Length: 249
Image (tube, rainbow, N blue to C red):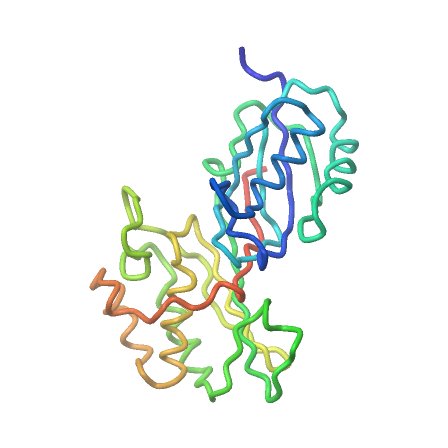
């Protein structure tokens, strides 16, 4: 028999001490600690579905998951109970009942990520887990020009982790921009979906542009090549944040 309720959970987490979202046989994961807390409250073995499976070290401000249950515990009570049980590096922002057909992953219309690069004159000891530190000059105008090349529908095979099991590497990017504020560079990207390591590979490529290793005009050719070896290295995970997952009202 199908479950009587479908519950949507919005949460944030510091990914520093996690092996990513997805539960694994060994290692601490966000899905693991969330499902452990849910089991204590709801009983049984609840299984969550996430909008996106963030990698080890990647953070989230606006992750979304759903879980099916027969429990009658009110949503607001469930939120309070979860936050009482979850570790300090995970916080549930909202819990709500949704329709039976809601699926956190398949019904997501777009996702927004932000990658933070610390380019300030003096290194901060507090940012090591939350931003990528660069101590070399960057050509910001060139990086901004290059970022614009990612907008639109493209085959992003050149920016996909090698061996990713996907049927298609075509994705649509609607926002790709760089904002500099107080010595920190914020790369904002939004799209219909993302391949594994796609944002981090884009960042590695943009940093090559910033250092003069690539010209902004090279980006279109790299995209067209569909060749991972043509793009830049994979940037470290700690600067990446899943900021928002958007659904139709």
